[in-house]
Image (cartoon, rainbow, N blue to C red; front, side, top):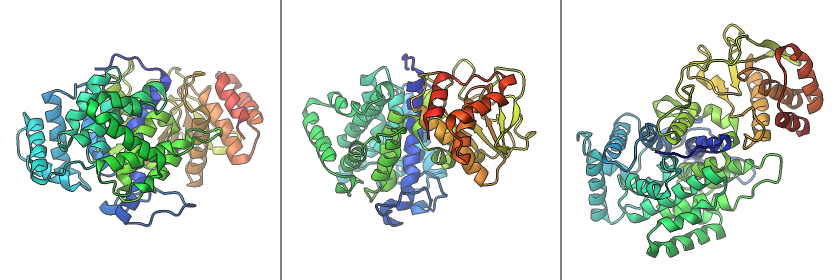
Length: 490
């Protein structure tokens, strides 16, 4: 169980791990094994669905489905090294195979099929034995199927790298006996752990110290090779080593933009991962977990967050919640989030004002009744409950990670801009949009001002001044960081 208390920025990064993997997965789905042509260099990959499982747009595949099986157990605070936890993960894998697997790797299918019908108690041991038997029979069990699902393991051991390595090996070995698979999982978990805590990609090399001494040199050479070549240099990426190399190549060789939005590195690196070809969804899912850990959920494009979804009705908010519960040792915060049905507002009075430039955008707070306001879509700039807005379809509820405190955001400018552009996109679809934060006094007017710039071309400072007049009687104060960013963005 983690004892590390995370800052708001670190929590943002932890929340990005599962969601980053899911977004990479869904982005790669249409292009897996050439089921659709890879986009040419001038065209970005899209979450169009299709692929091997005839997926819906934004739907993730077996990569994230299996990660969810692990996350369900990790989010209870269980020590993933214990027999009981491994039994539950194994049982989830078996349930997934029979109830939800849209696709499944050959090796994983063989291992799981051998244990179906067995009782839960002892199932982890039996599953691992099945993996060993398959390896002894074929000599091949170093596929990428355990690496693709491994990211959440890092979140359970942020304060214990040795325990993390032990758990990564144990979870990998449930289906993949070859040590190469578990070594890759240890390295990638080390990278994710470090990215969450420190905000850099340095943890991958540091993770070499967690491997057996006689394995470090080979893995260091493989990382060197990944950094020396583009992702497409590793086309046979069904093998765990080349899958890791393709993902690391996409991340390490993609430059961080020298713009207002450095977190665009996450988007660009995932595009590069998809363009590696072959097992596109898996390479991008692997890369996405580490990119999400580095840039945070606030660095993931909101259009992706809005549409990504998959097995067991899991959407972005659910994946974020599982990650944060894992970090918290199975415990929500003091007000029950994530997991509470409704967040209580900090003030008793509802805010219900029309945006001065667009009366189909309603400025509100947590007291505002979306249905009574006649809104059909909601953009939330604060934590909300699972049933905060009954009647509004889940796909039209977009949550933005934006903390109302200077210095508490990893990607302030990007989050503000994405929120404003999401309001614009929803309006283009014909929605009446509720834009709100907890009190409606700082984040709401900041994004509303940015919306005036994005949609109507108003200078940021002029838009802020207009918001101040509109909200003068409602406690308007927009914190200093948000003011500066809105005024500076073009």
